[in-house]
Image (cartoon, rainbow, N blue to C red; front, side, top):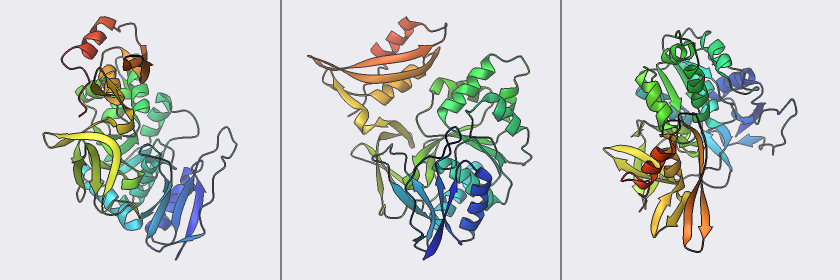
Length: 339
């Protein structure tokens, strides 16, 4: 058996130190939730000892079902880190911009230990800002530079870049990375395409705690990972799976393989029947977010005597053209593609 060590996400430097002990096989780590306005968050303590193979104990986000504690082996963490590095072109220096109690944040610190590099740690105890990001990027010295962001952070940086002067410090900072992983949810495709056109190297990451984080990059399964679609849902297998999952993990996400790449349509429980056809609310949101001027959108199911229909709540810039949005939703590319 192996002892466990619990460290708060409020102290990422302590988490980094813990990760060195995880890497050495001395402890199994658990990162507890960060404080909120200086007040600790209640959580159920982990058991004092676990099996020798365990490296991390993490809580799933619940995006594929009910949140639960998962044990991830050291072997799975290493497989994930090395497969990621192989896809990206080698190990490098990482910038931590996410809370370390989430698998994506924990991976940034663990991969820094694997790479034997000093990560730059942004203050995650305060709301994410472009200014804080710029300050952190200025401290990076690695020949290869990586970070991991969620779509909301990327949108905030993109919005800040839109109002900057011509020197565009945010764009320059983003361009300095060899890869920026984007995951956690479907990104705003308009933001992604805009930044890519300006030379920002974005990599869309798909995965979850059950798969030791992202295991599909830009629609391609990482080395050693098997990707398939079973009954319309994304299924994953390989050395990155958490303990107790079995040989294969069947997610709650609908997907399809297009041109050899995974396209995630949305969650299975976010599908409604409208006009006799199945409609993915996540797919609707993705289509609307790709429309120029839309910054945020939520698609909901509305009940009527004729069945269900889609309701939208959105935030948009002045450039928003509602008539073009109606063309997207009602035209040939309308998001009704779930079978």
